[in-house]
Structure formats: structure tokens, C-alpha cells
Amino acid sequence: MENSSSNAIFKAVIMAGLFFFLISLPMLTLIVFGENDAALYGENKAEIPALSLGSLASREFQTGFELWLATGHPLRVSMIGVYNQIKADTGRYTLSMLLPARKPSPVPPGPDGGDGGEETPAVIEPKFPEYWLPGEELIENTVFRGSASIIVGYSGMLFQNGYINEYFGYAPKYVNCTDEQLLDRVLALKYLQDMLEEAGKAMCVAISLNNAAYYPEYVPDWYHAKFTPPANYVRAYDRFKVMLADAGGYFVDSQDVCAAVGMTNTFPKTGIHWNKLAAWETTCAVIAEYERQRGYEVRHMMADRILSSPTPPGFGNPERDIYNLIISGQPQSAVNSMIFDDLYYWPDVYVDDMSKPQMGPVVIQGGSFEHDFTHYLSSFAITPKVTSFFYNNNGNPRAVNFDVLIPPMDFLLLEVNEQFVYGMGGNAPSWGDNDFNDPTEGIKNNFIDLLIEWMENQ
Image (cartoon, rainbow, N blue to C red; front, side, top):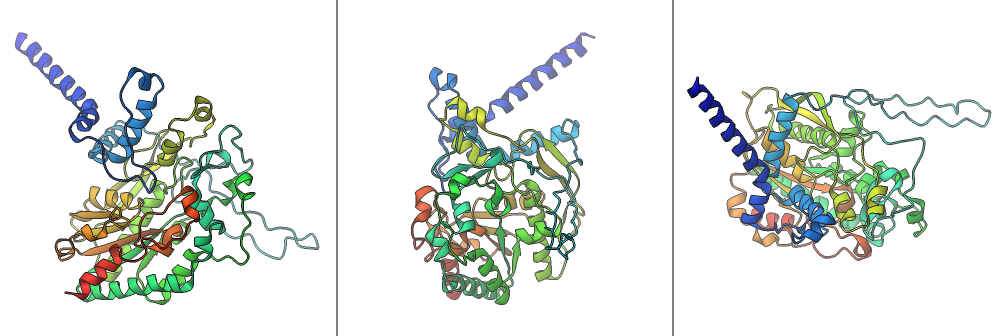
């Protein structure tokens, strides 16, 4: 009896020690590794304020630490994966399938008072629930408009100004982007694709999303009032996609993927990156494109249910990324005025058949959307290895050792968002006033061009 009691006490001590070790792991890692030196999505580095009684009382330290943890902690993805699995297994996440699909706008009446002579387009019912934005009333934040680079839109929708400027053509670099510039990128991509195909390697361009293109009605009037939209503006994204298809380039367009499954609400209010449902659907489409090129099936990701929580799940792209950036250092009145999503959703993913072959090693180059590709492809063993590079390798593409990187590579995935197709392969986009500057820097001598140069010398 005494021995049994001793064993119970021993187990309790071990479990308590393990618990306190796990919750202390972020701070221990901070002490050991120091600050992360990766730039945060073309904005600023995520830095932790000095720890003091004042920074604790003002919550400056907590906010800064949360931002660093969400973007720079080396074990963040693994910790969140374990945490999510425990929560899912214990049933504490709610499973909601009750959100309505966004209905199409009614056809305006014809001149005779009829229905306009057109039928209302059929609604594609989403397979899963989405973020639901209030369609009847657009609420303006009269307390806090944001910053030079982050705009607080109606009903709490946040935008980085570059996405708005690109969609409406407010900045000269988007308006002045020529067909020749786009064709130059397209032909380089096709040339690289052909060389890789000859070497037995697959390649795909993945076009990720621009939240201003999905929620233009949430851009506030005061921002529109600052600009005059250009006449006959055609987005570079629309021209680039047509050129790439005409050239025979292999690509997956996330906007087409989301439309095919009826997904219309693809962004959380608090971030500029797609939600996990859009990321997962696009990753599945990328896997399908790999299979098309290879001619055989590999492991597939499946999901039969959706997990949800009032807070983001934490893996991949942070879903409160620009919220964390914009709110840091703001007065409490600004913090209190912000509107959040009621719930964040992500698919409960599993692999349908682990006996199917994996992709070979994958190399991803692109913007911060690539974090979700990396998460899904690696966490579910679709490939044994993912190596990713942020834009122009953080401004230093010549530091990439192609001699080591390319020979074992099986699949090259090049990610570019709708806003940045004019400079694909270049440096990260600039925000704020810099979005109105000429985009010449970073378009040449970048990751893609240097890889072409390396391939030509083999």
C-alpha cells in the first residue's frame, strides 16, 4: 500500500515537472537562442521589449513576446501541433457546420420592372464553414484608422495598403507594370520549367490571394478619397495568369481553387493571409498538379470535419499577424475598438493512405504564404523534406547553395501573391509610402534568375 502511494506521488512529481518544463519552453528557448533575425513579412523584425515592471504593467512585454512567439519561435509549429491534437482528442474544440454560405447579389430589375432577363447564378455551397462577415451593415472604426501601412477597414477587416493599391490601381508601380515586364517573368518561368522537366524534376507556380480582391467593399471611404482610380486599369495578376497559361506554364491559382469549392470568405479579419481552409485547399491542388506531371498518385490530405476556436490555431501563417503589428504601442482605446473574428477554423487533416508514395524533397520559394505549404507538406509526411526561402532569400539570393539544394530536389514550388506578380522572385514588397516607389530593385538578379543561371551551367 505504501509502495503504491509512493509510486503515485512519484508520477505526480514527474507530470508536474514535465508540465512546468513545457510551459517554460518558450522562455527557455528565448534565453538560449535570443531574438530571431528573420524579417517579418516585409515589415519589421519581431523584437521583444525589455522585461520590466513598467513593460509588464503596460502589457508591452506581453504583446511583444506574443508577436515574437507567433513568428520567430523555432519550436512554435511543433508545440501548437501537440496542443491542437490534445484539444481535439478531448473534444474541447467546437465543431460548427452552421454558418450560411454567402448568397449572390440579386439581379437588378430590368427597365420594364422585370427580373432583368437574367437568371441568378447558382450558388456553390462551400464544403466547410467559413469566416462570416456582416453583409448587411458595414461598421466604421471611428476611434482608430490604422497606420501608414495597415488600414483598419469596415467591420474590423485589416488591409496592408499595398493590397488595396494593387487591386484598385492606386500606386503607379501597379498601373505602370507593362505586358513586357510580365512576359519577361513568364518566359523565364517557362524556360526554368523546361530545364527542370528535362532534368526529371517537377515545378509549379502557386498564386496566393490578395484580401482586397475578396473584400473591396470593406476598404473605407476615407482611403478611397485620397486617390483617383486610373481609367481602364487591368491588374497585372489578370494579365500574368493569361500569359502563363498561354506559355504552357504549370501553375495553381488559389482564387480559382477557392471558387471551385464555393469558398468566398478566405481571410480572417485580423490578418492578410488566407485562412487555413483556403491554404489547405490550395495545397491539395498543388499536390494534384504534382501528380498530373508525374503521372501517379502520392499521399493525399483529407478532412471530414472542421475544428474551430475563438483564437487562431497557431500553425503556418499567423492569423493575427498585422493585428499584432498595428496594435503594438497603441492606446487602450484603439485596442478596445478593434473587431475580431468570432471563430477561427481549420480542417482536421489526415492522410488517406500512408502506403502511397511521398513526393521527393520539395523546395519552396516565395512570400510568407509559403509557411502554410511547408506546414501541410511536412507535418503530414507528404514529403520527407521541405526547404523554403523567403522571397529573394531575405535579400541575399547568392547565399543559396544550388549545388547542394537542387540535385536531390524533386519538386520546385514558387509562390507569389496576386499583388506581387510584377516582381516575382524579387525582394519582399514594401508597404506604406514605399508602395508608391518604382519597383525596379529586386526584379533581376534574384532567386529565380540565379537558379536559371545555375541550370544553364550544368
